[in-house]
Image 1 (tube, one colour):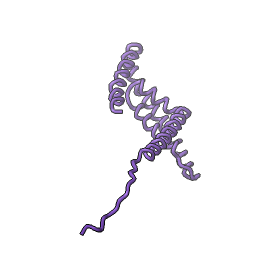
Image 2 (cartoon, rainbow, N blue to C red):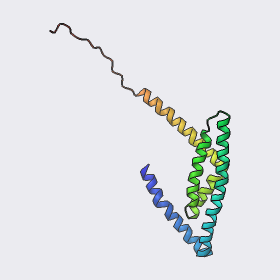
Image 3 (cartoon, rainbow, N blue to C red):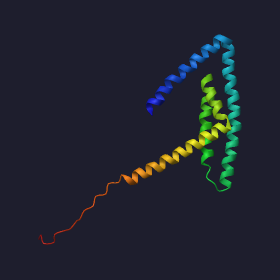
Image 4 (tube, one colour):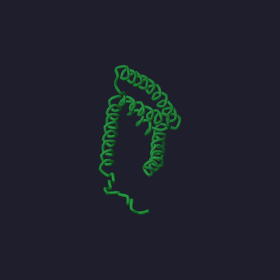
Amino acid sequence: MFKIFFALFIIVPLIEIAILIKIGNIIGAGYTITLVIGTAFLGVSLLRIQGLATLAKVHSSINSGQLPAIELIEGLILLISGAFLLTPGFFTDTLGFLMLVPILRRRFAETVFVNFITNRINMRQKQTNTRNIIEGEHWEDSDQD
């Protein structure tokens, strides 16, 4: 897992730099910077609206006596989306905006939830199947004085 994060930590900034250079050559540095700042402001305002809607769904689920698991995962996805939107660059902004689309976010949250539950069930089954049980007998000799 560490190797994946390390690779992403190296690859994503390189992708961002390449895209910024290409767009900067096409429309100019000033417009590129303005566009990056504009997408950050637009993303944060959309994130606020989506976050409040998700919070309302959480309250609704709790008030109806249901566990708001999917909504909480959606909240986590919105948190990650906010980090992507505040990171300067077009690649991370695209990922952040994709996470703001309610249908995509809901489907991703459901997939994460189902995979989490499936993995927990599989781990529990493995734990119960791999317990070492050693059968034996124990007795004490009372004749030794």
